[in-house]
Image (cartoon, rainbow, N blue to C red; front, top):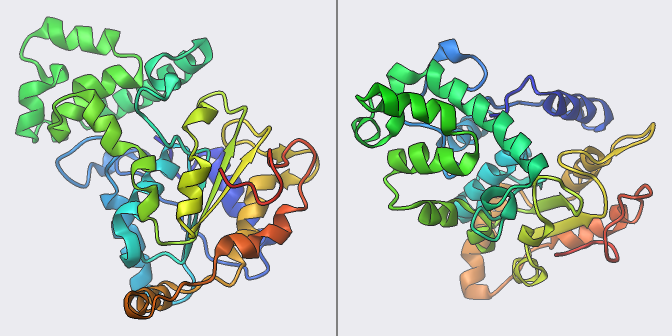
Length: 320
């Protein structure tokens, strides 16, 4: 449950403000109820990988007052939400370009970190589940306003034993989603929910220039769930990089700052078409069969200059 006080968020914002010659203004989003529990929730609901309502509201609000380039960066679970937003918004997205760093693209059984976690991954599950359960406790009475959730989730069971067992036994994300999330969203089973929430399912619908950065040695996301080369090649809006090293939201280089942030700055500096122009051109493309500038060609030159250990597995740019 990330928020604006996370160290990687603050570092990214600071580096963009300092190193980007355009000196952009930066906005960091707090997921509802995640940072300040006293503010309450924005509606009757709970945590969901598929929920992009807050993100959509924020982007639309910013676009009302800002008519210049508008970009977005997502990390880890936030990257999954951003990718889902882009796929669902399609050609009506209000973003000019975006970047997903260390995104878990697939939550189905292909992702062993979710379904068969190792010892390290279990530690991550414990930390993440603890944060979400704290969120549930802080908003317990607001969540009870959801009648369907109260009737089906064991955390709201009238039996004290069932409630206690849930608090003591639910220590991984799959268990939490099985006993809480799908009850709120009214999914029949966890398989359907994970299939719907997986960003890889909507990647082909993305119509906003999108930079994808993943690492092969990510301890939390198996490299086999990263987008396939065929999927990337089918969508001209995608530019994907898979590095040998970098870990999970890492990509730090000695005495040179964060490589991923520097790459994002260079990617956003490319001459992407504005959202309004892209939408107008796509409407015209149906009759004239026109394409538009491929961001992958524009980014190839800066991808050549990478520090040791962070080079893509194949020649630049790496499309996977």
